[in-house]
Every structure is written in structure tokens, then in C-alpha cells.
Image (cartoon, rainbow, N blue to C red; front, side, top):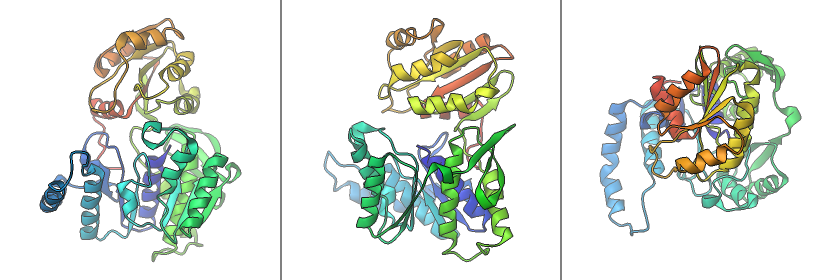
Length: 393
């Protein structure tokens, strides 16, 4: 977890060090254009369509050769668009977020000098395999020959896989134990304050505590990349200042984001047990009752366990869903309500998010808190409802 956040942090810090930085992430929240950026700005529609039109004949020619069981990945097409645009604009550093896997992800087609590994655990097992070792094998595949790899502390099984892949690719592998991570100090009005070695105290504009780990990993990657690029002396006070400025100016929408006050509304794509617990723990001192949690947990997750986590912290539960993504499905109303009522008496169901929010406002009043622990398509829907501009970060 944390791939997108770490990519966004890495790109922002590189930008503050004076590098024209490209960023490609997935999925998007509101529009395809936000997947491809330079210095935080999404690719303009006119450039996206122009480059895509230029590529269309080649894409069509390849598609004509495919069998019924083959297809061209949208991610591969987006990567082509990004690389073309970056070349046109003179990008000097690129940050790419891989998809759910890694080894066979389109982003891995592009050789890299630095590979980053955020926490790896059992997720997307239906695609990557039902063992932690197999999932780690997929993730480890992003290492390129002769490059560098950095990781946070991992399960011993994962660490063994990463080390073997580093040996196989002649990569230099470094991992950082918890004691070397940035240290949480306190909450601030807009996020958290933490201590990071020679960079001192930093006000990170994220509420989630795990973002300290992502920021620490990103700073290590930036130092490695910056060493091969012309610019500010790594040992200078100016370098430290730019790192601080970059960390304090990161914007990454939909990741434990506060959307409004009175009542306070927070949204996060926390749909597994660990992320739900982290969501609640990160803002527990900011919550005021009544706490109304809107949940949208897909059928491929541990619905019962996630419902239980939210039930224990909430005064009321509202279950919702949407059909924006064709491959993300939600449980039927009766099934989901029956599961949730094992853990809470006040359980409601609303078919769409706007109706769920209307009920949540009634229950929370002006002084309560509304939490949205929802799948990514509903995070994006929340961005639309609150009209959050996701094109600039």
C-alpha cells in the first residue's frame, strides 16, 4: 500500500529540487488526464488527444493481430502518451507508479534506476497468487538490472524475495527498519508534524500516520536520483531546505482527505482491515460524535472484518455502492445489511452516494463527523460532489 502517495511525494520533492518531473499514476479520480503530469500539472486535453491520435494507427495495427484472448493494456497506451509528452516538454526525471502487480506491469517495460517498495501484503490474490511469497515475486519484478532498490521494513518472506531479485538483477538493495523512519511528533491543523533526521521537523499535509513512512522512503529515492542529476549540492543547507519545502507542499487527493467542516467529512479508500484501522487511528483525536460512517466495500475484500472495524468506532453505519467501475462489485443490499447488523444496530443502506450523504448529514448534524471508507470509484465520486480540482497537485 502507499504506491501512489509515495510516487506523488517523490515527484513533488524532485520538482522542488529544480528538476522538471514527470509523474504517471493510476487509477484516476475524476479524469484520465490526471494520470499523466509534469510538475504536478495534468496533461492538457489537447495534447492528450493529439498524441493519442498520432499513436492510433500503430495501436490499431497491433490490435488487428491479436487473438480473442489478447488485448492492449490501457496502461501501456497511457505510458506511451506520457513518454511522448515528457520528451516534448524536456522532462528530466520521471516517477512511475506500477499497477497492482509489477513484474508484468506495463510500467516495468521502461528500465529504471530506482525501485521503491512500500508495504507488501496479501492483496489482489485473485490476480497475483494466494501466497505472500508469490505476490512479493510479482512486486519485486520492477527492479531493473544494475539499479537501486529501496524498501520499508517488510515481512521476512517478502524481504527474502526482494533480496533474491536484487541479486538476480545486480541491484543494490537497501531497506529501512522502523527506527530509521521519520518520527511522529504531533497533529497539526492540516496534517501531522514529524522529525526526519537532518531535515528537522516537517509539517506533512497528510492526516494518515503511515504517510511518514512513505515520505521517508521518498526522500531516500530523491537523494539517489538527485545524485545523478545536475543541481543543488546534496550536502548544502539549500538541499535540506528544498526537501522540506517539497514535503510540506505535497497534494494527493482522496487519501484521508478532509472535505469540509460542520459536520467534518473525511474520505479515504480504506476498504481492508489494516487501512480501515489506520484511517480511524490517524484521526481519532479529530472525531466528534455522532460519528456516521459510510462504507462501500467490494465483494473481493473481507467485508465482514472491515464492517466490524468501522462498527466499533461509529454511532451509525450507512452502506452504499456505485457501478462506475465494471470490475468492482458490491454485495447485495440484504446481504450487506445483515453482515453489518452483526456488529451494530443502526445500519442503513442507500444505493448511491448522494443519498447516503443526505442520510449521514441528518444523523451527524452540524457537530458530528462523517467518515467515508469507500472503494476508489466512490473516492472519485466524492471528488466530483465536492468539486475538488484533481488536475493540479
